[in-house]
Image (cartoon, rainbow, N blue to C red; front, side, top):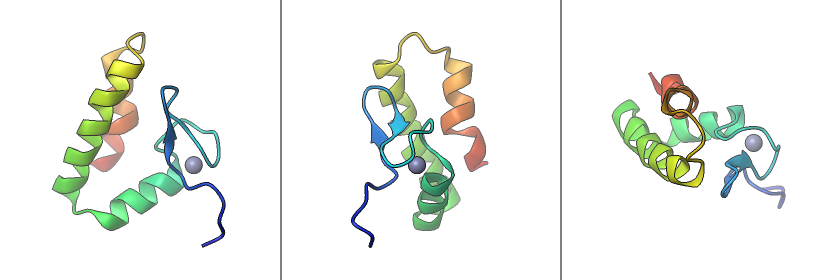
Amino acid sequence: MTGGPEHQPARPSWDCRACGRPWPCEPAQRELAGGHGRIALALVMWDHLEEAARDMPQTPPPELFDRFLRWTQ
Ligand SMILES: [Zn+2]
């Protein structure tokens, strides 16, 4: 551990706390994919998508789907 910020989403912007990119950034994706099977990963990301949709109601749902779920498939 480096003690730096982990690649977690800052709310309500959902930008990564560590690198500032839209979450899930690549390191976050690697970490999530490493810790879950494919089905569990999709369920976890679906939960995140629903929370993000509440935090960012102005963002079109297809955009959120691409961002949170498409990479898990
Ligand atoms: Zn990051």
